[in-house]
Every structure is written in C-alpha cells, then in structure tokens.
Image (cartoon, rainbow, N blue to C red; front, side):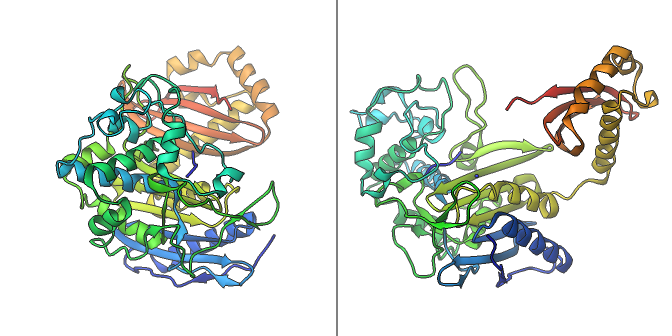
Length: 461
C-alpha cells in the first residue's frame, strides 16, 4: 500500500529459462548475483523474472518463502506486489473508458459529490497523483490501526473529505487515497467489482493464473517478514481487511507479472489510444513534468526510456521495470520490508542482461573516470580538451578541484545517467561515487572526441 527500500543457506529453484534468449553463462552469473545479494542482506527470498526480446527469458526463485517451516521459494510462490497494483487499476479504468462507462476527464463529483472539492478533481488527476487528496498510508511500517478491518468507503470518509494538501493539478504528491477513490468510481460506474473484472479482462486472457486479492491467502504464498535496523528477518503481521483495495491489493508470482509486461510491450489488452494515455507523462497546470503517467513512473536511464513502479505492503517489497525501446522488463519480488534490496538488485539485473554496456560508452566511461582521477590530483591532460575547456581549467580551478575532491576519499564508481545530443555535441551526465560523497558530472564532447565541458556539481541529499 505504501511505497515511494543472519545468514541462511539459499537455494535457487525451478528455473524457466529460454536458452536462445539468456545463455547458460549469463543465467549462472545472474544466479550468483542474486544469491550474493540475499547473503549480504539476509533477505528470506526473492523471485525474479526477466523479459528479453518480448519473451520470458529467465524466471527463478531463491531462498525461503517461510523460514520457520523451511519452505523454499519457487517460481509458483505468490508475493504481494503492493502499489504495482495501481497500474492494473488504471488499466481497468481505461478499459471502462473504452466501453463508454466513464471518462478520465469526469470529475469526482459525478460519482461522489460529497468529497472535498469533488467538482474540481478529475479521474485523471486521481490516477496521476495530482488531485491534492492526502495520503492515508505514508508510513513504511505497519501501524496499529492498519491491523483492524476497514472499508474503502471509510477511507474516503476520513481522508477524502479533509482539506486538500494543494490545489488540484498544481503539484504532484503520491497518495494511496487517490486510488481508493478511483477504485470506488470504477465499481460505481461499471457495476462490477475490480478484481473479478481484472481477472476477466486481463488475467485470464493473458493466462495469468495466480493474481488475486491478497486477502484470499493460499498455503503456498510467501510469508511476511520485516527488519529492525540491521537485524535478522522477523515475522510481521499484514494489514487488516479493506486497507489494500485498488491502491495495492494484488498478490501474484513474478512470472505472471512478467506476462503482463510482455502484453504491455506488445500493446495488447488496451487500445492504441488508451495505451498512449496510460504511458504519457501528466503535466501540472504550469507545464512542469511529474515523471508520472497513470499508475506508472516514467523516466530515463542512460538515454533509455523506463516505465516502472515499486510496491510495498507489510512484509513485502516489489519492483516492476519495463524498457519499451529494448523490448525488455525486469521483475523482482521479495518477502521482507525494511531492506534496500529490490531496487539495486533490479538495476543490477537490468545492467547485466537488459542493457548490456555499449563498448563506445564503456570507453568514454573509462576516460571520464581517468580524467576525474587526474582532477582529484590537481591536473589534466590538456590534449583531451578543447580550447574553451582548457581556458576554463585555470590554475585556480585545478587547485580547487584538488582541494575539494581529496577529502572525499577514493573514487569508487562513475555511472552514466543520461546521454543526448545538444548544440552539435554529445551531452552526458554522470554520477560519480567517492567513498564519502557522490557528485554529478555535466559533460559535453565534440564530434572529434574532445571534451568541451567537464563540470562537477554537488548532489544534495
């Protein structure tokens, strides 16, 4: 529901690999990477699925779905996916719009006129978190109230009748309340319950056999664990009935979530117009971007478009990342909250099997790292720079680079964040991680390979 994450023997189980996509060597390397991450964090289990070239290339589970019972995780083990459920709620509403049951531009007042400023807030603003309704579940741990039953209507009565946090459309703020309102609107407009509708229109057509409401628990489901500080996994209770709903109610396997990703990449289920609305970044009234579409985060990594969403409910963390231009996706599900595992692990998997390093980029990365190392010592190889850049690197500038970088310790990594063309040059942005601080690099390279700009900027915490 909430989002915007010792030592056991871990076993990899039931690999569903397609040899023509993910080679045996790559699969073994990926196994080792995941097993290492589990050992380092003490996480009970993860389930991973990778889509390459529009097909499932890797599906494997590691660790224990239940520690006390020594029940090993399998690819058939269901995990709660938390707020990843939001994209399914958004898809259901888009399908309802296609059927003429509602419109994204309908106001909340058409369905629930007694909610705060309902005549000013649209369904689109609910789905894009630009409505102003306050989040009823911002905490990243289970509070006592959530263990008691509730209903979506009770959530609306308590949180969607409060004063707004901001005027509709003027800011972006993540709020689970938006999706409870949206789910209630869907059911009122269509006369259908949300999960049965999803099963009929999405899950069954895509042969997704495991998705369902997490309140319908099955014996093979993963158990929930949390972590206090750096301690071991501890069993934790789940939220009571009614707290999930359209904001985060679904459980499923990583493999089934990857089937949705494949359909998403192929633009099935939804019409072309709906898909475009689904994935288009919503802008604020002043034209500023939100980096959010409808139940989807939209971003860019290293020049590659990324569509993603994470999820968290008590005892579970999940992340689903789709790379449309690469025809690829990565799913990582875990049965422990309170540990920063799934995000870095998903990125590492994507870097190794979805976005393998471009040799040209790798050469530039190595050169950038070498230049930064030289600057930390107060000098540069001026043959690598244009006259403009050489004019920038005065003796004073070089001295300031040396005295300000030296206290940061050793340079650990240099990571490309974005690559684009501008002013007839290649514009690159990097994150450079030193032992004690991470900084940003803002670089321009001319067509003949010279550095026209090499600026270092502070990254605020």
